[in-house]
Image (cartoon, rainbow over all chains, first blue to last red; front, side, top):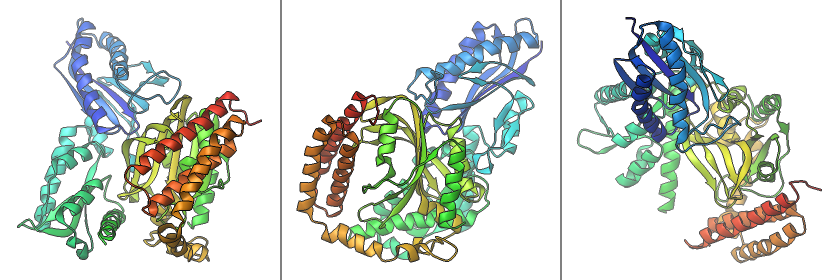
Length: 277
Length: 274
């Protein structure tokens, strides 16, 4: 019996974090029933998400008769039902398709093994093409097969699996702290926010004017959090004139981003200083 | 690319997308979202697409802020990608910066306008807003509409690598400071110290009284101008610290009522001006 992976990717305009989490949960919840009802056996089902895409992976899929074409045909009925199921929650309209999603749907990728699974939804046709990282021009990525989807997206600087993104963020954060011999506070809420704001999170370290440390610690912390920055302290917990942030993309133009982050924080802190008179 | 070249490139880009290039609208407004072209363009049946520079006045902010505004009803296909293309056309290399789309549910209570969208941050600093308008004057639209409002100074500072707005190259010979120098100090003083609070409250009341009368007479466009004046008066009162914690929400409700009257008058005529 031939078993191949099946992959469905729904590509959106940037989704709110809560929508990514709830849609992934819904896909994972509904997929087993729909696959089973279509006579498809599978080894496992997982759903992954970034701010730009939801990906459902059904591994080791086979049809009852063990034929590729039968499995692909069944998936062509299952996939649009799965996608449309996400349209039943809170959503917006952006064209006359009648679809309601949290943000506009812009692309469909569907593969069974190395063959495309063909269906249409909201005027879009599924295929094997998706987009890479926005910061690098959202270049066209043609995926060779479902089994290589994650690796091929990674080569396009997109880390689809949220667990991998989070693990990478934590690893790099620890390495950054060690390099600086300081402590970048690993605010869990901020880490979770960044998890669904970037497909390729890269740490950025910047400094700010020492005089602004005269502000109360809570004011500093609040200002940084609003800007999605992480405070930095020394080993004894004393605030330091540095901030850590994340960008979405490779480290070209890192200096621009460091300067921008610094100015954003300094402007915010100076406004708070001015209010205190 | 100097400041006026950025504007020209944006104009060329959005004209290619099918937008009419409008001109800035007169009455003071704190944000381009208060443009009547947006308000009535969203409410009127049928398509609309325009792009323009609006000179906005934020009391206690810079003397003038230029916002580039695009309104498209219906939105262009793949509108987010089209917006990113506009920033590139304006000289921004997105690979050299960090552009984030922070999801938000935007609303303007004074205009009864709302829709899902994003605050765009460029290298950590807010610089644009993109909204898929779903309602204006608390009325659902007859079709989706996209509204992009982009801070031109911020865009130019990133494109030119400048920290001080006054140092921006407006042309190859003149800076932003050469064009606008001195205005900031005078307008800040006016906003924070000299504006007549009593007079502003009186102006708000006059506008509030006149809007329904004009709207009933079929003059909803002049009525909307008065709404803009009332809104700006409120902003100045806030800058002068002449509003209590309860005053501003109450005034916003009164503005929303004015917006509703303008919208009703427009709808009664099917959105036709004549």
